Length: 273
Image (tube, rainbow, N blue to C red; front, side, top):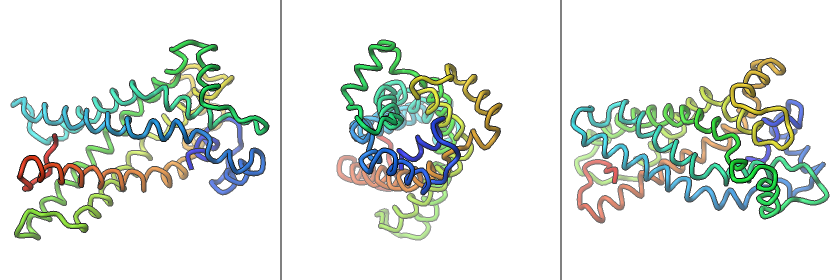
């Protein structure tokens, strides 16, 4: 799914549906091409999520204890999400750059390995080359902010309803299913609002193209392809990200809940460590 997203939002293909893009990739590059960039993706997901949620939780906990900001207010969620997005993007951008470059390697005869990709990128521009598209990633923090502000709002309402529904403080599978729905709704809204940065980031990471800067890329895409160009691949992004985010948020809440009960012996609310 990530392969088709990169293919659709890049410059190498005309506007395609998800099925058309998948068929095009298989016909021209073979079934193995559908798994390009899987290695960096597997390597990057765990540290990226760990860095993100650790930074988010620590920042949120710090802001809640400052005294002059209302605890768990939208301001706290905005600053926490922005901090987490900035740190995570800065640390893991080279991994996602290599993944995207591999996915956009259209040479069907010889598929480039991760090592070859790293060596080529380094030879072309040194360490700084691995941070191409980082500006687009920073602008993408607004998606993270919108996602978490909406999610935290829905979560607070769900917790209020759960507390009224139960006499004890334990959580059931139904509670975590509700958090999955909250994650899906918040991610859908955030992705639709901030999606153009994904197009810009993919174009910037593509090898040998005319795109150099974030705003220059958005302007060029708007000028040449119109509004539709800024949202190429949105459907694929939603199909890929919504289930992923729903599961991730429910898993995060479950882990926090279990660790809270285990180490803090209190379960009246979800505790951000």
